[in-house]
Amino acid sequence: MDRFLVKGSPGSLPGEGKEETRDKPAAADGDGEPSSKRPRREAGGSGAHPADPSWQHIRAEGLDCDYTVLFGKTEADEILQELEREVEYFTGSKCAALTCLDFWACGRQEGLRCVHTGALARVQVFGKWHSVPRKQATYGDAGLTYTFSGLTLSPRPWIPVLERVRDRVSGATGHTFNFVLINRYKDGHDHIGEHRDDERELAPGIPIASVSFGACRDFLFRHKDSRGRSPARRVAGVRLQLAHGSLLVMKPPTNTHWYHSLPVRKKVLAPRVNLTFRRIVPAKK
Image (cartoon, rainbow, N blue to C red; front, side):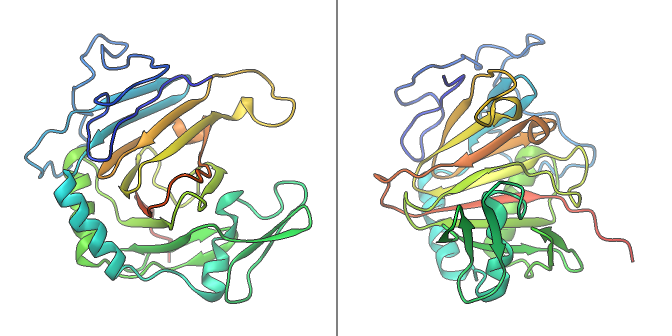
């Protein structure tokens, strides 16, 4: 059912491992340009990173993404170690404020309600309570606010390791970012359910840049029309494997039409830390 699949060991470039059900996006884009061409730079982009990464383009109806391994294994290992030492994750009620990232809104699904109290974030799904299946943190520029599940949060100030990754991503994509959401998955049991990154605070027309460190995990896209027990129509899903040190750029209109998730993979024993860089429009005073 998958439209596209990237497989490979952590640190390898897309296409270096065994591949299955592949749509061959590396041949050419729709306009005949080779898929290794770098994404068009935003006006005013820094372009500071000297190495031009080899991009793999992922296309489907309403889906527009680019993928590359941006950090070599040695550097990716170093960054992961720093992230493990330096990132401060939410606790208590602030952690609970992010509970609904699994469903992206309190009460939008039958049988679900959200609780924003207690030392652990929990959701109730069809009468059963579950702890939030990952750790989360936000960092960004001063004065920004970001709303999760109806609660407005302010990010922590940038720390050097996050600035290092942010600046590399900006150099590779030509876009600047002022906010990052961090998700830490301790192993393959930790996961995130289907959602779209479509909050009102996001700057229109700016992509979301997702950087992965640690265990290689499946990442699934599903078209909005293909969800539910009685989908409006059948649209082939898209499945990727996000390698250690990789960058996935989700460009508009992807988050308008497609949900994405990181499902449970019980055989994965190692942790994964994911950084999703965004540009937030500052709230008007």
